[in-house]
Image (cartoon, each protein chain N blue to C red):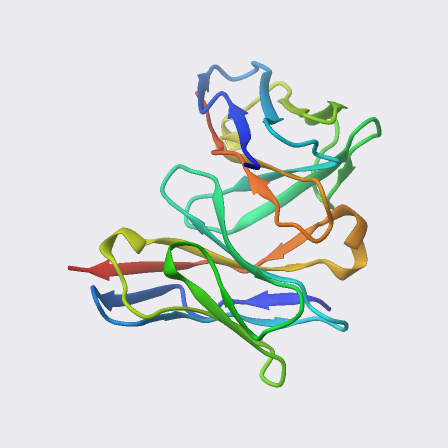
Length: 116
Length: 115
């Protein structure tokens, strides 16, 4: 069955330090992977996606993610965290049974807290 | 580009009231729109997928008669919570997509509170 796992409910990091938010996936075919961020009482904002090509994907606000096929992972990273990065982060994979409807399967979310 | 507008942002109403939430794609044509429900400190739960001009596809466990979805045009989908009760209180979010290889674009959500 297709699934996305975000093993950490919360990640704490000091401002200026690198951050990593973990995501692993399970699909039978080639994955379409996404990262979204949600600020309080707001919808989700798209950060980046992996469809094909380079394993290192660069996205908005200085975030990047590395696609690792052997480890079935798509961890979100940023070299230097900002307090304003504190938010809820969701990893998602395209539902390959429904490519024509763009349906996504979301992870449970990871709350990132960046301390000054 | 790719802006999705969701309205209203917050609704407080009495039990038994029906509430309509609108989701509009402002600068693109959305062939597909999605409606999600999010409980506090939880992930998004997909409620239904709607395609313009056809009936919505509901996820298992979502009551079709309770949550009416209409996708009358390529830029507008509406979710009506009929005869709302306190247990329907939640954060409802819509998203829209114009192409299968593009990300979904999300509205800012509607906080529904039923008294």
